[in-house]
Length: 451
Image 1 (cartoon, one colour):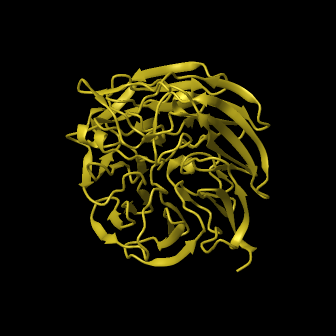
Image 2: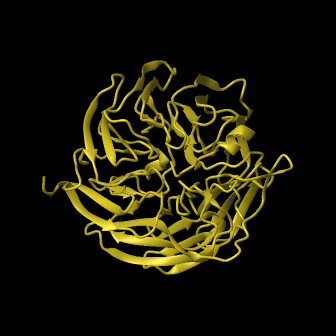
């Protein structure tokens, strides 16, 4: 991370249907959206019956208040929804957060918050048909180890499920496994996970019997990636990383007869064998804050970042060792948002800026199809795009979701407004759209509610 970017960092977190053959740890059918950005973490649903029109009353099957704050997205498995939240408690006397150092000097950020209160972190299960809260479990209660940015939350990491258990991560405050009845199966402390006082955001991923976490910290002195046995929480492997703090979530793909765990990072973009942690290939990193989730398709992986540098990099798969000089297919260095990830849908990569300017790139060549197309209303965006049936949904902090026609010509099909801000990324499952607003979780379904 460039030192300038550290001093001005304002993370929130959070936060593709592809030609490559993806590994599927969970059903990729339309009934499930089991992790951050759904099947293979790519933000794309194959469901063609999802609603594309709603308001605060129209097509709202239910809305359920969620106490506290969280930028984690809802995940869906069948009739179950899971999400996390952080509830602020009373002030605590004499808080003692860690001292962060940069180049031998103490680093302090004016937007730090949260450390002077106790917190309750919860995992919540909701009935997908009725919106009824089935259970909520306190994973952690007490003071936090570190600060967070005032626009971030302590519940920004999206949980993941395999249909039997749900796994929730709260950074320095631990990793938790619950069964579907709400029973705690195991919990794990990873020690302090220090991200310069900005809070955690990376989400856990599943590979066969492993639960994997990317834990990049501060200036890189303690960064690592680790895999746990998903049944017991026992550590299976751990690899040190030569990268500074990140808030990105890795992805798992199967391409060319091998399975890869692909990670973004400031200094290095690295592919690992997810079974062992052995490095497969690497290339020069994004030279920026690594927040966006990688995208995969057309025999390439697409890595992006939005601050301080804005760039999207297409890297050909199949290499070994350092492939910086041999496998970079194209670069585009404009238009990327700080927090919101781009999306690969069909033959195009769609890059969203913080202010909602949308750019469409040819996924194979990087050729610009359109650039900087505006949404109807000026707004700020942190939610990452999702896509289905030839449409892309982009949701703003004002609570507006813009339905954009996919393809090389820009067209806004519709604007759907809710009465509260949207920071987290929607889930698409079972013919419904689930949106977490600032206060409520919404189920959007065709024909529900009244106009």
